Length: 359
Image (tube, rainbow, N blue to C red):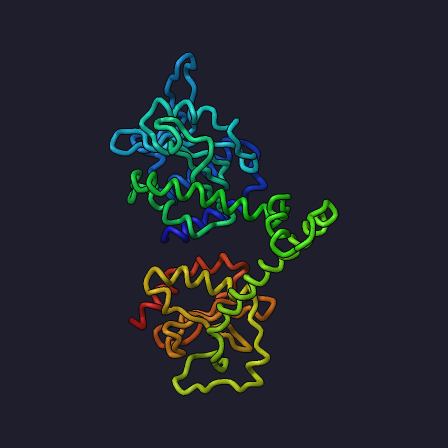
Protein backbone atom coordinates (compact mmCIF):
# COMPACT_ATOMS: atom_id res chain seq x y z
CA UNK A 1 0.00 0.00 0.00
CA UNK A 2 1.14 3.58 -0.59
CA UNK A 3 1.30 6.19 2.17
CA UNK A 4 -2.24 7.52 1.71
CA UNK A 5 -3.69 4.01 1.60
CA UNK A 6 -2.01 3.15 4.89
CA UNK A 7 -3.50 6.25 6.51
CA UNK A 8 -6.95 5.49 5.15
CA UNK A 9 -6.76 1.90 6.33
CA UNK A 10 -5.94 3.05 9.86
CA UNK A 11 -8.65 5.71 9.65
CA UNK A 12 -11.22 3.04 8.75
CA UNK A 13 -10.04 0.92 11.68
CA UNK A 14 -10.56 3.83 14.08
CA UNK A 15 -14.08 4.39 12.78
CA UNK A 16 -14.91 0.72 13.31
CA UNK A 17 -13.22 0.09 16.66
CA UNK A 18 -12.98 3.37 18.60
CA UNK A 19 -16.24 2.72 20.43
CA UNK A 20 -14.87 -0.53 21.87
CA UNK A 21 -11.66 1.03 23.25
CA UNK A 22 -11.87 1.79 26.98
CA UNK A 23 -8.25 2.19 28.10
CA UNK A 24 -5.00 3.87 27.18
CA UNK A 25 -3.27 0.51 26.74
CA UNK A 26 -5.95 -0.64 24.31
CA UNK A 27 -5.55 2.62 22.40
CA UNK A 28 -1.81 2.02 22.05
CA UNK A 29 -2.28 -1.55 20.87
CA UNK A 30 -5.14 -0.89 18.44
CA UNK A 31 -4.12 2.46 16.95
CA UNK A 32 -0.78 3.91 18.03
CA UNK A 33 1.40 0.87 17.37
CA UNK A 34 -0.11 0.41 13.86
CA UNK A 35 0.61 4.10 13.20
CA UNK A 36 4.26 3.69 14.24
CA UNK A 37 4.65 0.37 12.41
CA UNK A 38 2.52 0.67 9.26
CA UNK A 39 2.46 4.42 8.62
CA UNK A 40 5.85 5.60 9.91
CA UNK A 41 7.53 2.30 9.02
CA UNK A 42 9.38 1.57 12.27
CA UNK A 43 9.52 -2.00 13.55
CA UNK A 44 7.65 -1.98 16.87
CA UNK A 45 9.08 -5.44 17.61
CA UNK A 46 12.70 -4.32 17.24
CA UNK A 47 13.99 -2.76 20.50
CA UNK A 48 16.75 -1.00 18.61
CA UNK A 49 14.10 0.99 16.74
CA UNK A 50 11.10 1.32 19.08
CA UNK A 51 11.34 1.20 22.88
CA UNK A 52 8.05 1.12 24.77
CA UNK A 53 7.95 2.40 28.35
CA UNK A 54 11.21 4.27 27.75
CA UNK A 55 12.90 5.33 31.02
CA UNK A 56 15.14 8.36 31.39
CA UNK A 57 15.61 9.73 34.90
CA UNK A 58 15.12 13.49 35.08
CA UNK A 59 16.40 15.36 38.15
CA UNK A 60 14.48 14.17 41.18
CA UNK A 61 12.02 12.30 38.95
CA UNK A 62 13.23 8.71 38.95
CA UNK A 63 11.82 5.84 36.93
CA UNK A 64 9.36 7.92 34.90
CA UNK A 65 8.41 6.38 31.60
CA UNK A 66 7.53 7.78 28.20
CA UNK A 67 5.19 5.55 26.17
CA UNK A 68 7.45 5.15 23.13
CA UNK A 69 10.89 6.29 22.03
CA UNK A 70 11.85 5.87 18.39
CA UNK A 71 15.55 5.40 17.67
CA UNK A 72 17.56 5.87 14.53
CA UNK A 73 21.32 5.36 14.28
CA UNK A 74 21.38 4.51 17.98
CA UNK A 75 19.93 7.85 19.13
CA UNK A 76 16.47 8.87 20.28
CA UNK A 77 14.78 10.80 17.47
CA UNK A 78 11.09 10.86 18.40
CA UNK A 79 9.27 10.68 21.76
CA UNK A 80 5.61 9.68 21.91
CA UNK A 81 3.17 10.11 24.78
CA UNK A 82 -0.24 8.44 24.46
CA UNK A 83 -3.69 9.01 25.94
CA UNK A 84 -6.92 7.08 25.56
CA UNK A 85 -8.81 7.65 22.33
CA UNK A 86 -11.40 10.36 22.79
CA UNK A 87 -9.41 12.12 25.53
CA UNK A 88 -8.53 15.75 24.93
CA UNK A 89 -4.88 16.59 24.31
CA UNK A 90 -3.51 19.56 26.24
CA UNK A 91 -0.29 20.69 27.90
CA UNK A 92 -1.22 18.95 31.15
CA UNK A 93 -0.89 15.67 29.24
CA UNK A 94 2.54 16.62 27.94
CA UNK A 95 4.49 17.16 31.18
CA UNK A 96 6.66 14.07 30.67
CA UNK A 97 7.34 15.03 27.07
CA UNK A 98 8.62 18.43 28.26
CA UNK A 99 11.01 16.80 30.75
CA UNK A 100 12.26 14.05 28.43
CA UNK A 101 12.68 16.41 25.50
CA UNK A 102 15.19 18.43 27.54
CA UNK A 103 17.46 15.49 28.44
CA UNK A 104 17.48 13.45 25.22
CA UNK A 105 18.65 14.11 21.66
CA UNK A 106 15.08 13.98 20.36
CA UNK A 107 13.99 16.96 18.27
CA UNK A 108 10.46 15.70 17.68
CA UNK A 109 7.84 14.75 20.27
CA UNK A 110 4.30 13.56 19.67
CA UNK A 111 1.22 13.71 21.89
CA UNK A 112 -1.61 11.49 20.66
CA UNK A 113 -4.85 9.78 21.58
CA UNK A 114 -4.60 7.41 18.62
CA UNK A 115 -6.76 9.60 16.41
CA UNK A 116 -5.27 13.07 16.78
CA UNK A 117 -1.50 13.56 16.65
CA UNK A 118 0.19 16.76 17.85
CA UNK A 119 3.84 17.23 16.83
CA UNK A 120 6.21 19.45 18.82
CA UNK A 121 9.79 20.67 18.42
CA UNK A 122 11.98 23.44 19.88
CA UNK A 123 11.40 26.48 17.68
CA UNK A 124 11.03 29.00 20.51
CA UNK A 125 14.00 27.96 22.68
CA UNK A 126 16.74 25.44 21.77
CA UNK A 127 16.40 22.06 23.50
CA UNK A 128 13.12 23.11 25.14
CA UNK A 129 9.87 21.73 23.75
CA UNK A 130 7.49 24.38 22.46
CA UNK A 131 4.15 24.78 24.19
CA UNK A 132 2.30 24.81 20.87
CA UNK A 133 2.54 22.05 18.25
CA UNK A 134 3.93 22.86 14.84
CA UNK A 135 1.70 20.25 13.25
CA UNK A 136 -1.63 18.63 14.09
CA UNK A 137 -2.99 15.62 12.27
CA UNK A 138 -6.40 13.96 12.63
CA UNK A 139 -6.81 10.48 11.13
CA UNK A 140 -10.56 11.02 10.81
CA UNK A 141 -10.06 14.30 8.96
CA UNK A 142 -6.92 13.82 6.89
CA UNK A 143 -5.42 17.07 5.63
CA UNK A 144 -3.48 16.28 2.46
CA UNK A 145 -1.50 19.52 2.80
CA UNK A 146 0.45 18.12 5.78
CA UNK A 147 1.19 14.69 4.25
CA UNK A 148 4.57 15.73 2.75
CA UNK A 149 5.76 16.77 6.23
CA UNK A 150 4.39 13.62 7.84
CA UNK A 151 6.29 11.52 5.29
CA UNK A 152 9.53 13.12 6.49
CA UNK A 153 9.05 11.35 9.83
CA UNK A 154 8.92 7.90 8.25
CA UNK A 155 11.88 5.56 8.66
CA UNK A 156 12.69 5.51 4.93
CA UNK A 157 12.60 9.29 4.52
CA UNK A 158 13.51 10.57 7.98
CA UNK A 159 14.80 14.12 7.59
CA UNK A 160 14.72 15.98 10.89
CA UNK A 161 16.50 19.07 9.51
CA UNK A 162 13.90 19.48 6.77
CA UNK A 163 11.12 19.00 9.31
CA UNK A 164 12.54 21.65 11.65
CA UNK A 165 13.07 24.08 8.77
CA UNK A 166 9.44 23.74 7.73
CA UNK A 167 8.06 23.64 11.28
CA UNK A 168 7.90 27.41 11.75
CA UNK A 169 5.74 27.94 8.69
CA UNK A 170 3.58 24.93 9.50
CA UNK A 171 3.04 26.11 13.06
CA UNK A 172 1.79 29.57 12.14
CA UNK A 173 -0.18 28.53 9.07
CA UNK A 174 -2.08 25.94 11.12
CA UNK A 175 -2.79 28.50 13.86
CA UNK A 176 -4.05 31.04 11.33
CA UNK A 177 -6.30 28.40 9.74
CA UNK A 178 -7.82 27.57 13.14
CA UNK A 179 -8.29 31.27 13.87
CA UNK A 180 -10.07 31.82 10.55
CA UNK A 181 -12.29 28.79 11.22
CA UNK A 182 -13.24 30.10 14.67
CA UNK A 183 -14.01 33.56 13.30
CA UNK A 184 -16.19 32.10 10.58
CA UNK A 185 -18.13 30.17 13.22
CA UNK A 186 -18.35 32.75 16.03
CA UNK A 187 -16.89 36.09 14.91
CA UNK A 188 -15.41 38.16 17.74
CA UNK A 189 -15.82 41.92 18.15
CA UNK A 190 -12.59 42.94 16.41
CA UNK A 191 -13.40 40.74 13.43
CA UNK A 192 -16.89 42.24 13.15
CA UNK A 193 -15.59 45.81 13.53
CA UNK A 194 -13.00 45.21 10.79
CA UNK A 195 -15.73 44.56 8.20
CA UNK A 196 -18.40 46.85 9.61
CA UNK A 197 -16.07 49.87 9.53
CA UNK A 198 -15.45 49.27 5.82
CA UNK A 199 -19.06 48.96 4.69
CA UNK A 200 -20.97 51.11 7.22
CA UNK A 201 -20.55 54.88 7.25
CA UNK A 202 -22.36 55.61 10.51
CA UNK A 203 -21.25 55.38 14.12
CA UNK A 204 -20.68 51.81 15.32
CA UNK A 205 -23.05 51.79 18.28
CA UNK A 206 -23.60 48.60 20.27
CA UNK A 207 -26.86 48.02 18.40
CA UNK A 208 -25.04 48.35 15.06
CA UNK A 209 -22.27 46.00 16.26
CA UNK A 210 -24.84 43.41 17.33
CA UNK A 211 -26.50 43.67 13.93
CA UNK A 212 -23.19 43.33 12.10
CA UNK A 213 -22.22 40.30 14.17
CA UNK A 214 -25.13 38.41 12.63
CA UNK A 215 -24.47 39.91 9.19
CA UNK A 216 -20.79 38.93 9.34
CA UNK A 217 -21.69 35.38 10.32
CA UNK A 218 -24.16 35.14 7.40
CA UNK A 219 -21.64 36.63 4.96
CA UNK A 220 -18.84 34.26 5.96
CA UNK A 221 -21.19 31.26 5.77
CA UNK A 222 -22.35 32.28 2.29
CA UNK A 223 -18.75 32.86 1.23
CA UNK A 224 -17.80 29.32 2.28
CA UNK A 225 -20.82 27.89 0.47
CA UNK A 226 -19.87 29.82 -2.66
CA UNK A 227 -16.34 28.41 -2.49
CA UNK A 228 -17.65 24.86 -2.12
CA UNK A 229 -20.04 25.33 -5.05
CA UNK A 230 -17.26 26.70 -7.23
CA UNK A 231 -15.08 23.67 -6.47
CA UNK A 232 -17.95 21.32 -7.25
CA UNK A 233 -18.58 23.08 -10.54
CA UNK A 234 -14.89 22.82 -11.37
CA UNK A 235 -14.83 19.12 -10.48
CA UNK A 236 -17.93 18.50 -12.58
CA UNK A 237 -16.65 20.42 -15.60
CA UNK A 238 -14.98 17.23 -16.85
CA UNK A 239 -18.46 15.79 -17.34
CA UNK A 240 -19.41 18.07 -20.23
CA UNK A 241 -19.01 15.23 -22.70
CA UNK A 242 -20.50 12.19 -20.93
CA UNK A 243 -20.68 8.91 -22.81
CA UNK A 244 -23.56 6.53 -23.43
CA UNK A 245 -23.81 3.83 -20.79
CA UNK A 246 -22.55 0.38 -21.64
CA UNK A 247 -22.98 -2.47 -19.14
CA UNK A 248 -20.68 -4.93 -20.91
CA UNK A 249 -17.67 -3.31 -22.52
CA UNK A 250 -16.36 -0.06 -23.96
CA UNK A 251 -16.68 0.06 -27.72
CA UNK A 252 -14.63 2.26 -29.94
CA UNK A 253 -17.57 3.65 -31.88
CA UNK A 254 -19.68 5.01 -29.01
CA UNK A 255 -21.42 8.29 -29.66
CA UNK A 256 -22.09 11.17 -27.30
CA UNK A 257 -25.44 11.49 -25.52
CA UNK A 258 -28.05 14.01 -26.52
CA UNK A 259 -28.61 17.30 -24.77
CA UNK A 260 -31.71 15.84 -23.13
CA UNK A 261 -29.65 13.02 -21.67
CA UNK A 262 -27.06 15.50 -20.40
CA UNK A 263 -29.71 17.53 -18.59
CA UNK A 264 -30.88 14.41 -16.73
CA UNK A 265 -27.41 13.60 -15.39
CA UNK A 266 -27.00 14.39 -11.69
CA UNK A 267 -23.49 14.13 -10.28
CA UNK A 268 -23.56 13.42 -6.54
CA UNK A 269 -21.04 14.32 -3.85
CA UNK A 270 -20.59 10.60 -3.20
CA UNK A 271 -19.57 10.05 -6.82
CA UNK A 272 -17.08 12.92 -6.61
CA UNK A 273 -15.68 11.48 -3.37
CA UNK A 274 -15.29 8.11 -5.09
CA UNK A 275 -13.56 9.80 -8.01
CA UNK A 276 -11.02 11.47 -5.71
CA UNK A 277 -10.32 8.18 -3.93
CA UNK A 278 -9.65 6.46 -7.26
CA UNK A 279 -7.52 9.40 -8.34
CA UNK A 280 -5.48 9.19 -5.12
CA UNK A 281 -4.86 5.51 -5.80
CA UNK A 282 -4.05 5.72 -9.51
CA UNK A 283 -1.90 8.84 -9.29
CA UNK A 284 0.85 6.63 -7.84
CA UNK A 285 1.36 5.09 -11.30
CA UNK A 286 0.25 7.86 -13.71
CA UNK A 287 0.25 11.66 -13.60
CA UNK A 288 -2.78 12.95 -11.66
CA UNK A 289 -3.60 15.45 -14.44
CA UNK A 290 -4.31 12.54 -16.79
CA UNK A 291 -7.12 11.14 -14.62
CA UNK A 292 -10.54 12.53 -15.49
CA UNK A 293 -14.21 11.77 -15.01
CA UNK A 294 -17.38 11.68 -17.08
CA UNK A 295 -20.82 11.21 -15.61
CA UNK A 296 -23.69 9.46 -17.40
CA UNK A 297 -27.26 8.56 -16.52
CA UNK A 298 -26.35 5.02 -15.48
CA UNK A 299 -22.78 5.25 -14.14
CA UNK A 300 -19.94 7.61 -13.24
CA UNK A 301 -16.89 6.87 -15.41
CA UNK A 302 -13.25 7.49 -14.52
CA UNK A 303 -10.89 7.64 -17.50
CA UNK A 304 -7.26 8.07 -18.40
CA UNK A 305 -6.46 11.02 -20.70
CA UNK A 306 -10.19 11.85 -20.86
CA UNK A 307 -10.38 9.04 -23.41
CA UNK A 308 -13.39 6.75 -23.42
CA UNK A 309 -11.20 3.96 -24.79
CA UNK A 310 -9.06 4.13 -21.64
CA UNK A 311 -11.52 3.39 -18.83
CA UNK A 312 -10.04 2.96 -15.35
CA UNK A 313 -13.29 2.08 -13.60
CA UNK A 314 -16.96 2.95 -13.25
CA UNK A 315 -18.90 3.92 -10.13
CA UNK A 316 -22.42 2.49 -10.13
CA UNK A 317 -23.83 4.50 -7.22
CA UNK A 318 -27.33 5.27 -8.54
CA UNK A 319 -28.87 2.22 -6.86
CA UNK A 320 -29.31 0.78 -3.36
CA UNK A 321 -26.43 -1.69 -3.81
CA UNK A 322 -23.35 0.21 -4.96
CA UNK A 323 -20.84 -1.36 -7.33
CA UNK A 324 -17.31 -0.59 -8.49
CA UNK A 325 -16.91 -1.58 -12.14
CA UNK A 326 -13.38 -2.75 -13.01
CA UNK A 327 -12.05 -3.55 -16.49
CA UNK A 328 -9.83 -6.38 -17.73
CA UNK A 329 -7.33 -6.20 -20.60
CA UNK A 330 -10.17 -6.69 -23.11
CA UNK A 331 -12.09 -3.80 -21.53
CA UNK A 332 -14.80 -6.10 -20.20
CA UNK A 333 -16.33 -4.77 -17.02
CA UNK A 334 -16.78 -6.76 -13.81
CA UNK A 335 -18.85 -5.17 -11.06
CA UNK A 336 -17.78 -5.58 -7.44
CA UNK A 337 -20.31 -4.74 -4.69
CA UNK A 338 -19.09 -2.20 -2.14
CA UNK A 339 -20.68 -1.10 1.12
CA UNK A 340 -18.69 2.08 1.76
CA UNK A 341 -16.37 4.33 -0.23
CA UNK A 342 -13.44 2.97 1.77
CA UNK A 343 -14.04 -0.41 0.09
CA UNK A 344 -12.60 1.10 -3.09
CA UNK A 345 -9.15 0.83 -1.48
CA UNK A 346 -9.56 -2.97 -1.43
CA UNK A 347 -9.25 -2.87 -5.23
CA UNK A 348 -6.26 -0.50 -5.37
CA UNK A 349 -3.90 -2.96 -7.03
CA UNK A 350 -6.22 -3.78 -9.92
CA UNK A 351 -7.07 -0.10 -10.44
CA UNK A 352 -3.37 0.73 -10.77
CA UNK A 353 -2.84 -2.27 -13.05
CA UNK A 354 -5.70 -1.14 -15.28
CA UNK A 355 -4.21 2.35 -15.63
CA UNK A 356 -0.86 0.79 -16.52
CA UNK A 357 -2.49 -1.18 -19.37
CA UNK A 358 -2.73 2.01 -21.40
CA UNK A 359 0.91 3.04 -20.97
